[in-house]
Length: 340
Image (cartoon, rainbow, N blue to C red):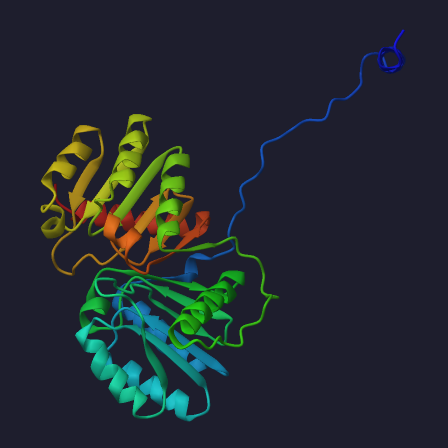
């Protein structure tokens, strides 16, 4: 008998003996599916519409002890400008990045730069917009915005989310990369974080689309979206596929913008996607998706192919049932006030 076959026979006899001696009660290890992580983000970290968003912004800036990092698509709010100037003059390290193609930003940059505040235009190429919008305090807290810091942006129906766990530090590292890309000088952000893991995923540029596609494809019950515009072909198809699987797919859109793509709207409606249009006042500024009432994604801009390919975009994906239920309640209220 060859050696290999002899060894196999011995192992078979040993296994048979173990089964016999244990009365065939040998336990086979159970393989259970991996449990998806749940974020610790509380519902209190959500700030909806102007007053809540603006007041929290002021409070965070006031609380800064060492540093304030700002990246904004558009910024000309006088009170925030003065507050950042005051904090800079008090010795706080204030760094600001703005999109260079927005007219309002030129006055803001000139005003703050003349007072020795470290403010720069993000070096976007012509035709590319930096839609990234967040505030980072002491590299430990971050407020992720839907709205820009302008009267029009802050008056829209929109959302901001406060991060205080590991994701806040991750936001600081992303800002440092953008600052280095702009100035060639990196910031002194710690290489690791002692903040608690909050299981929030941050994505930039094309990875925003990847996060959206993944969340849509893995949803099992519902996909509720508030966004002024959705035209990216792959996302449109993902929503159609989800509706075909019986998912409750609903869209609240900006009618004026959405009507520019009637073929897309009819295609979605024909495949079972429910669509309503948000009232014109206040304007819909939100770029939000809620999945199964258990997780949500907030992104920086409309979901178009150009946004994902050309622009500088940002998103957070938050697997928090507590926060998602609150947002679902908001969505239901918006759904009732929206029109067919």
